[in-house]
Image 1: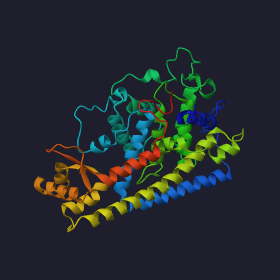
Image 2: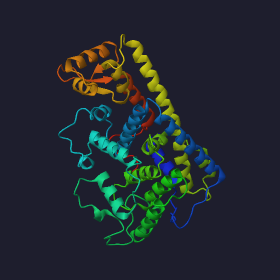
Image 3: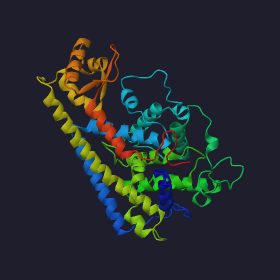
Image 4: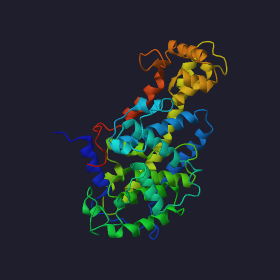
Length: 406
């Protein structure tokens, strides 16, 4: 029987992370990298910085940023095992579900709710202005873990492995003994990690990757650790003013690599000299290179789609409803008449006339067959999202199964 994609992933993760590696403190023991690794890191950071600056001045900034946020949120939900509900996520901005309590979605595993929750947190944790004076501390890491995973008011602190442990030698139940620190060492390692995150060690990419890596090995909570490392990475990028206009797509890269062939670096240097930490940094640098290329491709795609749309719609006056929608739909591909009227400051009849015009031009299509309060989606944009999802989702993934944990 041919092994599944996910069993191949776990074998790769064993090779990548190792089974006998013990992490070292970061703040007190500076890490040295080879010239080749530093060159790759420098290339990734230069590319990302240039693309971030370019997109900041682009008319398609909002489109690219929304796409990255939505795809990163869906990827994060996929890692949790939630089903993909693309239309539900895109529709949420104009159709709030009164029965959807975002404070409980982690428990109920609502696929739409989990992605919406992730999108809100990803945007907040990537905001440079929000993280200017942020201090990494035990209290803040507890709060971050709570907001990512538990309903408001949950008594969750007993899950912190550095406190209230009956047996100090208890190890994390999901990981082999040689890959996990015992609770007796958790507090010392976490205090070291906080000192590391609060000082501008290295470049933003190295610092974010090292912090994420260290959390994966320390595993400071008994459960639900998966999102914590990603969001600490977002916070470091923002605190270092690295993500001014776009985000670093950590979750997208995490699952996109599953179907990749084994890297040359791992295949040729999987020796005692090549530590798991080096491989983690290597993939982090490659992530910036790949994302920079992806973002430029997004901008080109949106430019071509808008140009194609405008060639289909005749007699569009500047600043009329159709003119506004032909650009607005790139970032907000699901709309209804009420949204259009409010967005363009027009009457409902005028909004309905514009929708009919775009439907007849095959730019919009109705989501369902109802006559009143109908929702429409931009066909080309939703198709583009689905193409991106097809490129990212691993072939062996099954909804309801967490991607990186058994």
